[in-house]
Image 1: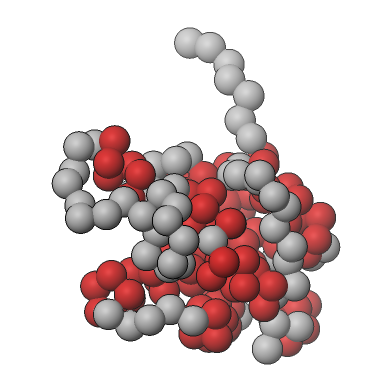
Image 2: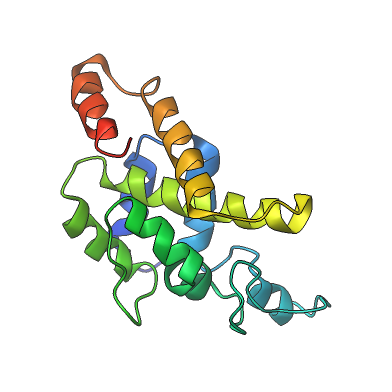
Length: 167
């Protein structure tokens, strides 16, 4: 019917090495369709609070806060040596992260760190396990190790060396 310009991040997601579940999760995140508390509020779902559960600040849990600007998220990104620019949001921030990571596997790092933050948040909500940047980094590392099984033999050594930079 028509032609619409698509941000490069959508192409990068599907070309990445991650498992399908984190890819779909990240697509939902970038498309602002992930069920964060502000989305649930827009859908008229009643919750005791719509604030971020990962920090003690009274910020609404929106995607940019939860994954980029929350003190917990900022610490998680620092574990993999990424600085989050102020007032950044998806999908544009992925280009900035790409420039900082400087690797062909950059999208995997971005997807898996977001996945780790989301998993830590969900463990707090559903299991009462307090999130910590160290635990999020552990989730990140475990997911990175799974990538080794999905990569072509010709890229395996390069991926192995890249993974070692995060261990």
